[in-house]
Image: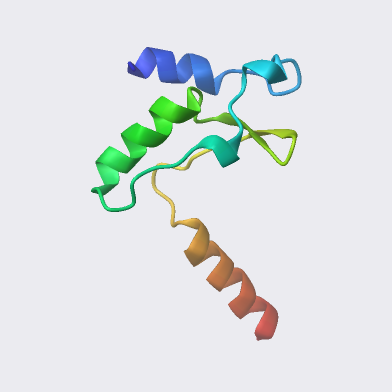
Length: 84
């Protein structure tokens, strides 16, 4: 998959996309015993569009930050602020 193809997938409007064309997240499995790059490739290949998936019957669009901390770090920070 090229960068241009990924940009086209990223531009998909979740409000108008044909939901039958999206992959259900429960049908995506990657080998956790491989390195990170191989897991990412496996995910993209199986998801077909890593930005738009079906989760529990609902079409969901994802956005990925290049230079940001991960979800786990964000949740820890959020919970820490709530406790203080």
